[in-house]
Image (cartoon, rainbow, N blue to C red; front, side, top):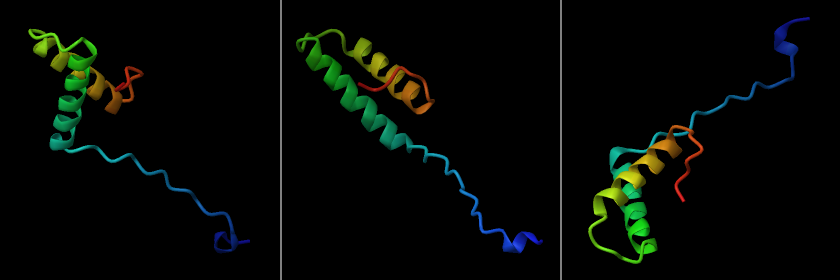
Length: 69
């Protein structure tokens, strides 16, 4: 028997595409704004919201269970 007669097809696993830096920036921006709205639109916490959004977005793309939402 030769392998040419083997009818099993190999399934290739594709790596998920990495987002561009522009896409990451947009995701962070949107999430930071969402966090701002969830906090009651209180001013003075923009850096906190931005850093939390970065943590979640980067964690999500690195497979961390932190998630985006």
